[in-house]
Length: 282
Image 1 (cartoon, rainbow, N blue to C red):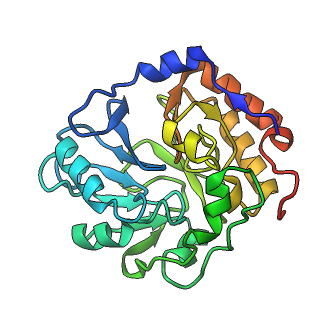
Image 2: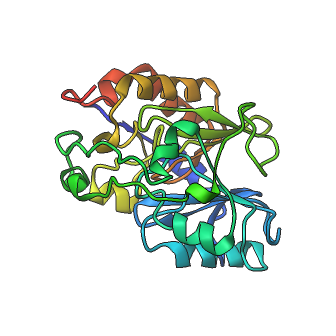
């Protein structure tokens, strides 16, 4: 498969974000920041100093990341670092690692697409990973990754049917299935900011080296955990059609500007060639 690297122009646009911060986050617009926790990103939506109940956590990192998330939230927002809610793009193990701990500690609701609820209420395992796709050490190790659900059933709510996002004014959720049945992305039209989840990512997640070094590359969803490639293709094309100005994905560095859009357009147009593994489940 051909990959879609991002050029030095994208590197320069990427460098323009505010990375020199005392809360260990990377701010991409004044009210959106993210923190890389090993191989995955968590996103903080809200202005600095907003205080308890005035910001939203998007996704909850890898297992063992509760302290890092809590610490960053306290430093960025003040107070007890407590959000209004937690919004889940999807429920793979590297996005729900601290979910039970933080939701219970903060006593906050969790919102997700209804199709993702079985993986968040303890009732259904995800399909096993496919180590034969994508190459790279993480792909080979993927059968060891947990597929069992977490259980936050007592705090779990559907995302609103009108596509608004609770406690996130001006944001809308976009269904982007394929990587999981109920994956969503979050979109704000007024400044064209996109939180993509794993609908597409900006690193080659199958490779340990790429995942750790964050070498910029426009990439389809992580191959070893993507069972529905036809839907994944449709989701990428839907997001490319939005013409985002800034994107932050579940894996890889946030990107902005024309170089990013050109790479996303190329991914959408050439998805079969550059993103789909030749031997795949679906």
